[in-house]
Length: 248
Image 1 (tube, helix red, strand yellow):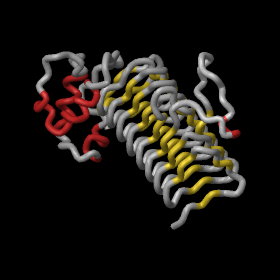
Image 2: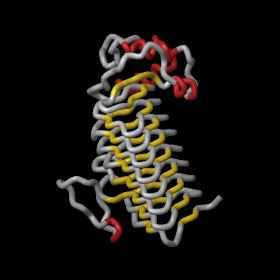
Image 3: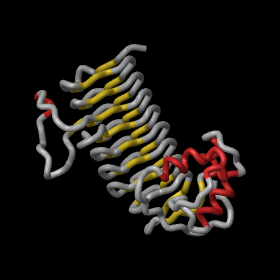
């Protein structure tokens, strides 16, 4: 396979393309931007416009007037038609390897999207959000700026995410509630299925691993995901709707 750039696409100055990249007709990619090997950019996707912040200059990057911190699309990522991804202000707005950003989805400035994640059609993610690996955000959900969605979490369609979502949690509803654990996701990520019940018990008790008294080994291989969550700074976890058994 070789790099395939439609003649109807616009690739601006400061854009670095890896090997085997595909860019469809009508797509606009503005620099600074790095698109890694094997990424697929769909028709009409818009990548690299300046951040939507009134305190910053709205530069005309298509003329070579480059500013801001850039965008990075990871290896094998798929950006579907009509998706919009804005420049970062102090760090690259990034899409992790093999992640999918579906049609009409929006990633604002400074968003970090992990690997193997899915941002479904019509989702809007506000500025500075951090989204972990293997996260799945359902269609037309809205994520408030500066929120954290941890590894393996699932967000239901149309959910307004106004608080932080802990590892492998399932969140949905209006107002949103933590309503179970992503048991299938835990197994697919290579963790022992028995850890599902242990994690659910913690969430049902209101323990979101934000304190100082947790034991790293008590959740086995899930400890890495929990350590990542704890490392994100001050967190405001989603309120819980108690479940009597793991939700699939």
